[in-house]
Length: 138
Image 1 (cartoon, one colour):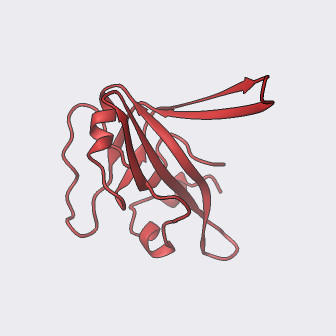
Image 2 (cartoon, rainbow, N blue to C red):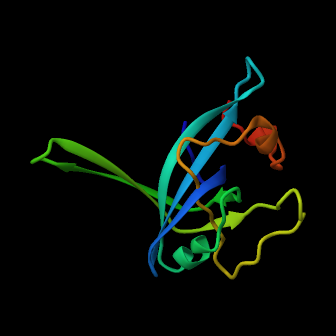
């Protein structure tokens, strides 16, 4: 299924590209009903655009976010016979940190975060998120 609005993600890397573009490497996992373990459903870069880019730039590796509005687009480059998929996030919400128990500060927009390549949240880290099993797609 990948990720959707309202899904929880872990930030692995933050790359500030410009004042209006910050790229985050995030991962989203879901619980496997058969094994009870968490499987990575999506891992990749998401661009935060506009005002949310500055908020995303303040995120740190290990932060957790609740995904807001996302746009997915594809483009095909005929000369190289290559298709690209772009993920653009327009808002997000910081999730309570288990250590601090406090929401990260943010303005009217929601906060977001970034990640590190080939690193995934452990089942223990994901189970700390406050989720309702009724919201799960499986």
